[in-house]
Image (tube, rainbow, N blue to C red; front, side, top):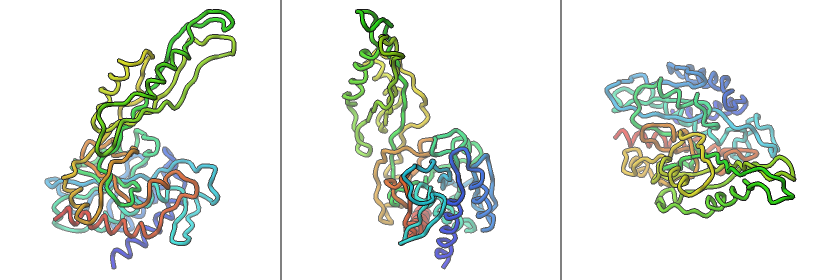
Length: 354
């Protein structure tokens, strides 16, 4: 059966990708492997930076277009690995290796799905495949750069490990750098205005403040102070205290609203690092979601951020593997998850086509 061949080829492709280091910004070798694999399957490919993309053979620009996207970069392996992270070991139904779960299994399953539909004539919509770079660092040379090269996209599937259920919403990520200003003085005398004490008041606000709007999919907003830095020596009252806040934003707030609320409640200077990774959602009655429900998938809101945040069109996050295994030591994916992923992706698009 074609799906059996797709599965076997996909598993072999994933083993090649695991064996080839592809840290963010260093994905040129895995890009070449993906491009070669697609070309060997008869696909005409395109390359932009370390991103590989292709369109179905009978592409018709008058039809709507769906994007199949996942990434081929990885984080660096952590020190807790007990096996070689670049050695694709298959054992007890699992395939071990860096990037196997996040997001290699998703990527090769989407590649197989694209190949399945590549030659089909008279599809009611187009299929575009994009294997992209720099997802793990939210870099500017991944999907964000590639979108300008692609034809118009009407909807997308982003391959990330979700146990093949549908993440219909994602929290956005807003990181802000804060500085509390005081006045330097000698610690032994009643001099100065301690910036640390001023920062503590604002930090306590970040710790305890509750935003009013709670999402049914994504829950409440979450703010976490993650870095703090102040002082130069023990006997000097510090004049500045800098700290960083990680803010996970649900779909009910814009970043501008969040920043306005913060600035009206704290004294420190606020500077957002980036406003690119905004919260996203796809309507639960969108044809992609309805197709997923038809084949027995459920939907949920995801607390993590992916390349979905950079897409200006409705997109699902969905893929084989489990997010809980991502970035863990001795990362693995069950090989049957890949077989199931290919089958469910194909069923999803078949139902979407109908």
